[in-house]
Length: 117
Image (cartoon, rainbow, N blue to C red):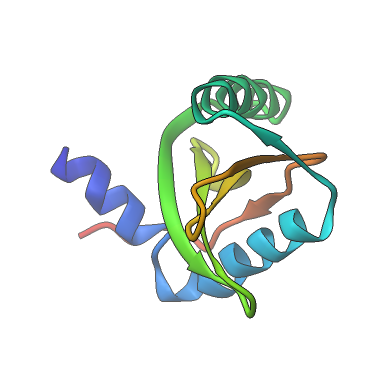
């Protein structure tokens, strides 16, 4: 488990990637969102991530929930980290009311190279 935490800290949570991850959330919020039950959203979006990774010649390395603040509210966004140092933003949950939303399209971003010690 600590190895996965190290990967997350060196990639998704790295200072060099915060602007990209934040932009990914904003891109998701700018598109139409469909409300969905949490369990359905998780299953559906993990399939989307696996397909997107496969299309990019990669595999899903891990899924991570990230709490992110927007100018209007706080969201919890599910992100999939690919084996080729890219990430895809998946479903989001409004942290104030617990409603999950599935985006119309999921942005893929390239992350800065991980520096694991």
